[in-house]
Image (cartoon, rainbow, N blue to C red; front, side, top):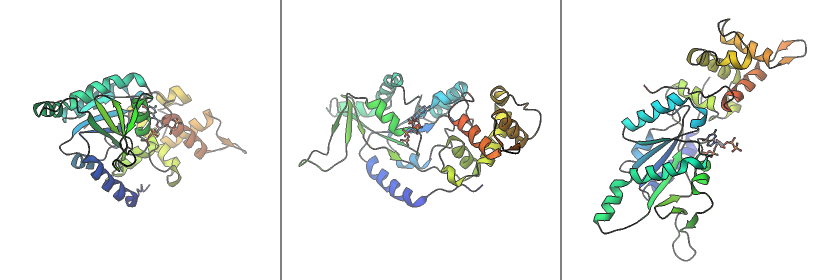
Length: 281
Ligand code: G4P
């Protein structure tokens, strides 16, 4: 399968981000906790040079708890601040506020030495499509925030959300583009639903996911679909899933496409359990 992306849009997005990044102290980068490496674009490291950096392992509720821990350590060892997150849940936001202060400690200290007190940290959310940027901004900002900037007759500028007296957030997230030099990255992005499904071969996606799961998470398919994981090749298991879920055409022909779509959907919704698709190297 050949995974494609659309560089045209991305050139514009990158230019916009270069401009926006000049205005901020902290880059809050969301990645998908199921594929923390494949869902990031390393170009952000050059774009966000000299800025404080926080990585949110979002959708951590769908990912393997042990792998979440490993990935968090992995990013921390590389010098990022890192937090596991379910962006839909307000409960995690207090931790993030604390980590933001921690990540920007140097800047706060610099300000203090210059006699600037309580200047809010300016932050911006970035990430590839569908990682949960809007959800995070909505949950984090909550109802209590006020929009600042862009006042008529004053300055024509960016919209900022005043989160609290310590933090301003740029109200539009920066959209990064997925990057894949190798096809396995494209495959992982497709598994979590970050590629346009119309352009993909769902059967092939399903077969590859079956192959991965039987190796990395033995027992998961047996539990959900009652298939014997030892019994054969991925195609045989897909047939078993089809039978278990009654994906049969008239004339008792197996409907592999329907079974593939159903299986991928189960995975994306977390119905197969908490699963991570890559491990830190
Ligand atoms: P984006 O701005 O980065 O493009 O992503 P967005 O916030 O639109 O989120 C994409 C989808 O991911 C949404 O689901 C959202 O609810 C879901 N999501 C965001 N954060 C989390 C999380 O931490 N855990 C889980 N499990 N899901 C998360 P959707 O199906 O597109 O829409 P809806 O279900 O909210 O209607």
